[in-house]
Length: 280
Image (cartoon, rainbow, N blue to C red; front, side):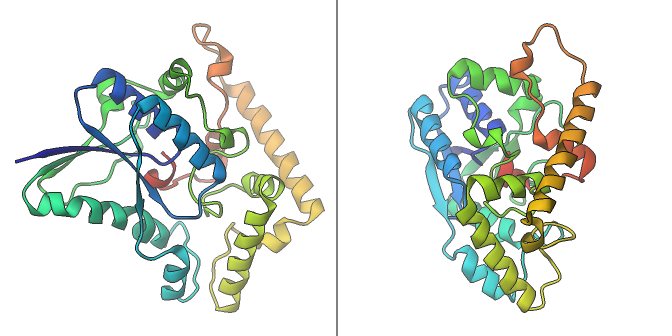
């Protein structure tokens, strides 16, 4: 029986930190790093993956779906994916991974999949193995690595944080429906062309009878209005200041290494729950 060790990268901070951790602590493992590319990722994600490859000294394998987002959108009757109907994750992320490891499992090999769930994320669960020869490993939980530990790994390695964290809380598609309204507002500012593409998808979906818009309660055409953008920014600042007042500063860790994630505010204020394989 052969063994295969695989670690999926989303383009996010946690999975990148896990890759660094495994490279440093278990250099003897022949780890294969992979990224399931939807073709709808932020350009900053590709830049970060290239930087991470430099540290790892190994190519990150790209897994592409045989059919793209546009194909699956048509298959689902132009209904946009949503938190309750995450067909994008199933078809563009999970399916390519399962197809990649299936030949190994079919011939009886053992596959170890390493997932970046931290020690301080008791509420999260990894991919549940549906095959006796696929074992999911959670090294951060085993070694007690929490969010500050992730920042430490990224900082000490020189890889640092992905640039999109300056304005966005997660990796994933440019039009991810788990984005907060502030992130849509910032997408409009940072990548207006991608915002327009998302708006076009939404228009087609609404014309086809889809009950979903990308962001709950309003269309992107409504969200992009100047007065609404100003309101979104003001609301976010209120939430940020409230979170800052709540946090206790750890004197043993510089404050610059433990910034407030937009995601922290998202979990508190807007429900959270993004797909692990997309943003971890």
